[in-house]
Amino acid sequence: MARPFYRALKKAYPHHSIHFLASEALSTFEDSDFCVKKRVLKQEAKRGGRRFFELASDLASEKYEFAVSLTSSLSSSALLYAARIPIRVGFSQGGSQIFWTDSLSWKGIKSGKHKTELYLELINFLTGKTWSLELDIEQKDSQPSKLILVAPGASIGLRVWPYFKTLVRALSSQYPDYEIRWVGGKSEAHWHQEIQEEGLRNVRDGIEKTTLSQLIEWCRRSALVIANDSGIAHLAGTLACVPTLVLFGPGDPNYIRPLGPNVLKQTPFDVPCHPCEKAYCHKKYGYQVCLRHISIQDVLMSVREVIPS
Image (tube, rainbow, N blue to C red; front, side, top):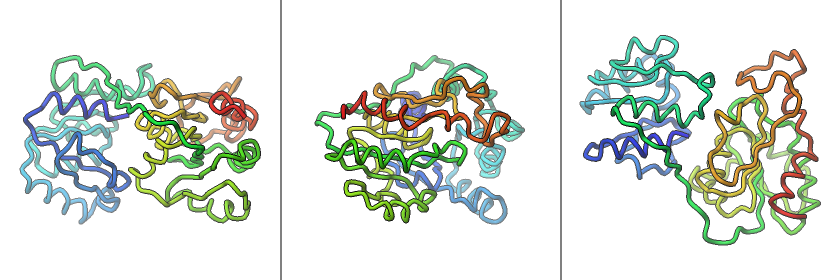
């Protein structure tokens, strides 16, 4: 969702050398189109203490002129302040504005805009110009292979649709000529044994077996990607530009959906608390009631729109 911002940033400052400070999860992500150097922000440095100040000192030695952050957290703004970077610009939220030299209030979901558009407002703020949204979409030239990717993970457990195992059984039966491949990272490692126990002939375990770049390539080769409201949905729907079915529970599709042209969204019907955008479930209507309202048949019907059985 941030890539249109980075594209605009590079156009706005064509003679500047742009460096990224990226999380460990993005350490293998290919972003040389936007930056000339990438540093990795390790998890332990985020927690403060010695590692935090060592990183701040290291950044200070580079004598950066200017820092911009799309993360509105207090820790991010504090790190750039500790690195003695003279101009520091970001979104203000939760007190982070005390460390920015200039800031823009983070409006979030209440803005009624997609998150990508909110990120672009920061570049508008920086330059005094209005930058249009340019999606980073790569259309496929070749015909997709007989491959369906299933991504059962999400950054928080509340957004994980609970019926993936049943869905894969149905896909295996209804699409016997297709390979059904599970994908994900370390947080989905618990699926290894369950996949093995199922013993389905055309189902493969691809969890923990790719870098981000390799995962994007798998997406490009797929006829369809089925995912929760997650990062993989964005990799598939926008970057790989393949048909992507996204299962939305608490998340609001109008705020965080992948912006690719071949994205199908599955949302619950008649759930009073949807969308809530919360990291926890208040259970007034039942735990995960939003995702549990999305049935196997609902999903299979959407799959058949892309791949007739």
